[in-house]
Image (cartoon, rainbow, N blue to C red; front, side, top):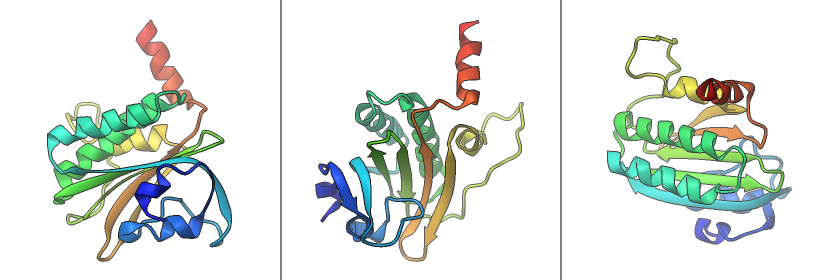
Length: 178
């Protein structure tokens, strides 16, 4: 099964099929034993040139893919941050966005690139800084996140969100309404 074929799959998808995808990326965090099925609703994978204007394209793909998902706004924000980081710091000529949505409405999203220039860092919260908050947002708003680096394949920064809005996000929404 190719990734393009995987994008149209609904129901059970064998992990081994996803692991065998082009580029060697597993789209499932901490995959269960090979052959065990996951309840994947949809998979979308898009590759972009690593230029600043393509970050908005990645946001748009995320918005379109998750239009009816309760945590779509969080996902769009985090995709924007990770895509921007990839363009700005990775030294890659491209980045790839992969969005996996389960029937339980969990989301697993990866931004992958060639990973030429080191690993992303979670910086200390500096209120006066004009940049450096992207990974802090990922850390606060994602259910979990991580970095996968494979020699020769590049690097992926991934995060998981579910249909329940984190308290931090709810607090941010309430502040905006005051």
